[in-house]
Amino acid sequence: MHPMLNIAVRAARRAGSIINRASLGGGAVNVRSKRVNDFVTEIDQAAEQAIIEIVQRAYPDHGFLAEESGVAAPDAEYRWIIDPLDGTTNFIHGFPQYAVSIAVEHRGSLMHAVVYDPTKNEIFTATKGRGAFLNDRRIRVSKCEKLGDALVGTGFPFKEMKRARLYLHQLKNIMEGSAGVRRAGAAALDLAYVACGRLDAFWELGLSPWDIAAGALLIQEAGGLVGDLDGETGFLESGDVCASAPRVFPALLKALKD
Image (cartoon, rainbow, N blue to C red; front, side):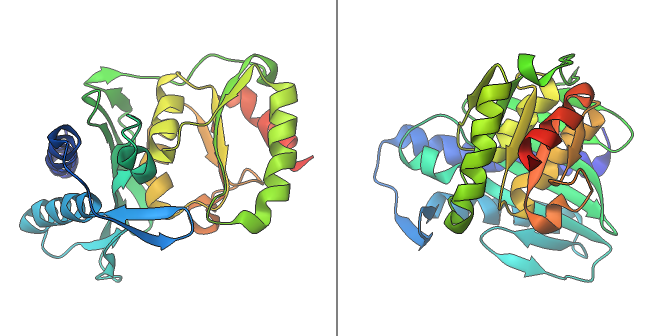
């Protein structure tokens, strides 16, 4: 394992232990609303701080883009893209679908990725050019060849409700043209599920880089395709992402654009 990925795994597991301890403690969690339908808890903040402390001890000159802390050292050669608790609303309600997401960029190129599900103790990892893994077992995207046979994950555009009409048209097309649609509420984990073949495809609108970055590299290293709604590479900037097994991708793009 690359030393940088090893640090990312260590940081993700530390954050996961904070999350698990809180979920099993049974006590009240302080919740604050950042905007409509978007929440942050003291657990998000504690988990993020733990990740940053571990990374800074190993790489003090690296930069960060973190959901709760914002941007640090934006001109650094390496940047860590961190979501300490993707699926906060699920966590608040005790719905066990959430994850820690950490990606490492080098000069704008995704190099390492970790998505850790603390409820199942499943850790997805990838390094550019070295494949993707689930608990040290090599993973690949599904062999699905047709959108009509695909199980497709999605997420509602709750941060951009003005785009609800577009999304509902997309949802109608996908529901009519696929084997089924699932919405679990943690995009990083949905993308990891595409990487290991549990989902055949995924799309969502209006995400943030920390929701997408790690999962995107996992899918690419597992043999899948990731793009924006035009199939291009600007998904981290636009926040609109679709991903799938290779043979499903053209039909997925067409269904989302029609």
